Length: 345
Image 1 (cartoon, rainbow, N blue to C red):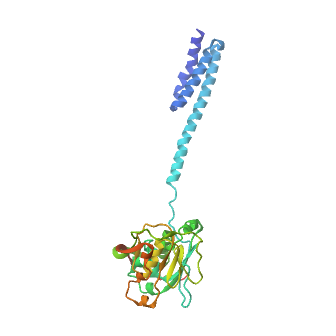
Image 2: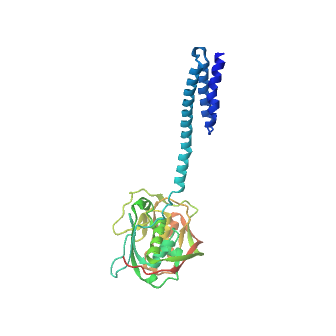
Image 3: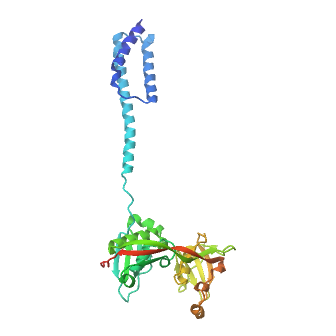
């Protein structure tokens, strides 16, 4: 009878106050709370812990307060988790977009007659160049493969853009320095292209539109036999003063009858072949991606230079297991919509 009487008075506070919890605990938390209440019930109902109804009421009120505090803490902590996740998501959604690459400092001045042009083009923290605006535009907008002059033509520009020489010097900001140094070959540098475009738009108010057509070219291919190319060993061959010429990331040493290439890629080689081919495009289709050491015979005699033979016959690539075949390649026409002479700075 005492147990039944205690149960009646013990259950009243929970029944009376059950509506003050507007939330629904998670299943795991609900199990923990139920286990806690069951243990309390068992302790209260045991003969050794028999209490008067008044004492039971006091203990019941204490238990209720403890459970209320426990539930409040659990629900508060669970509410904080989605709030933190929501804040993180909002922060990610409002992240600032990546800023387009641009040179931090750009100087463009008319070239003074009698002075040497700026060289070398590439610098660890920027670039420098002496040329015409038509060349700057061609370099800025031509896709980064092959010889720019063989892949594009600037049209509808004023005469001064083709004739007047300018010195341009640009420096990279500290935040872009590492990326610039990784992308250090100007002939294939996307950063160089983007930075030069931005500089021309800012300083010369340049606006252009482009069209693409197909043009004849020569494709450099691997012949039937394996190419006679050795992967380069850095430092194995040293430059020779007065006979060494830079080519991409490598170089070649020129003698009367041959050119010895060191650390040269096929993309670098087609640039040289294009220049030797009077600017008519030669493009790489070998599929060879490494840097190599090799030698090519060179006919430098006056008779060869003045003959009617194909210019590329003077340096035949067949000697190293490569061949040249006719093909086509996209050619970019760059039309000038607006351009202004830049103010010297």
